[in-house]
Image (cartoon, rainbow, N blue to C red; front, side):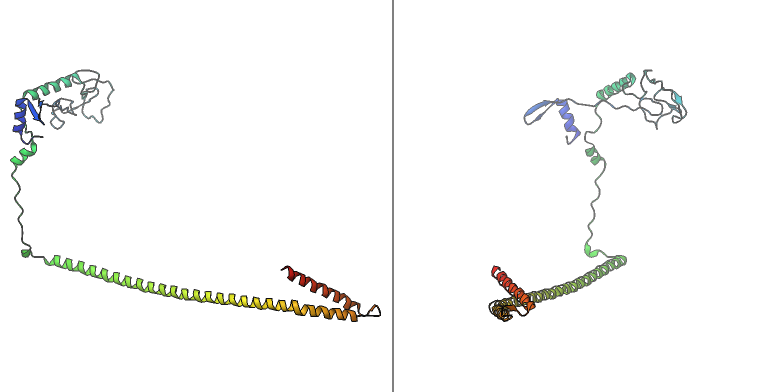
Amino acid sequence: EFNSPKTRDDILNKGYMTIDYIKYDVKEYLPQASILICSNCMGIGHFRKQCKQTNATCKICSEQVKDASTHQCQGVVKCLHCGGAHHSNDLKCMVIKQFRSDLTKNLLSAPHKQSFNRQTDLALQFPPLPQASKQSITNYQMSTNVQNGIMIKLDQILNSIHKFESTMGDLTKRTEVIEEWITKKGKNVTKMENDIKAVQLSNVRIDGELKHQVKVIEKLFIPVLDDIITVLSELNIKDGRVLDADFRSRSGLWKSEFKALLDKRLIL
């Protein structure tokens, strides 16, 4: 990119330029010229707004009609310029291609009059904007409406802060209630655990006492009862005859139960 049109013209006149100690040949390049095709009359070189033809020309059949929107084209393709079987605005048309070629040659042969750097030209054509004046803040006077608006906003902010503090206070109280409930719950759980341990200890003590009582019964009462039943069974027989058959039957049953109880305890 060049900084000025003069630099560009100098390089074009020399026909070369040097970049990093390497010499490059330079030639001016102009792209193929764009042409205008009127959408009303299909003519070359102007827009629809500059068109002087009243009727519209169909780009397909080249017929002139008053209203192109209501035109019922027969579909026979015919170019307005060359009569060929293509649309009248087709860039491949020989007439349009020749017009473009001639226009490009004229542009290439004409002296370069356009500015190379449009931004530079615009800067030269239009003077710079005046500098903004700086006003001291000490001389600035705030209007009453602005002051009132600021005061209203400040009041709203303060009210919002108070509401926030009130909400935080409520949350703090609720948190304290929850913590107190958790503490009481913990105390209740501790008391319950202590009660359970006390019951367990009591059960252990009672179980020990029961085992002791069972041992006393096994070692003392059952043998004594067995001896008593044996003596009574002997007294129930006189002269080889049973005096009380029912007692004899029951005494045998009792002795069997005592024996079974002792055998069971031995297994355990």
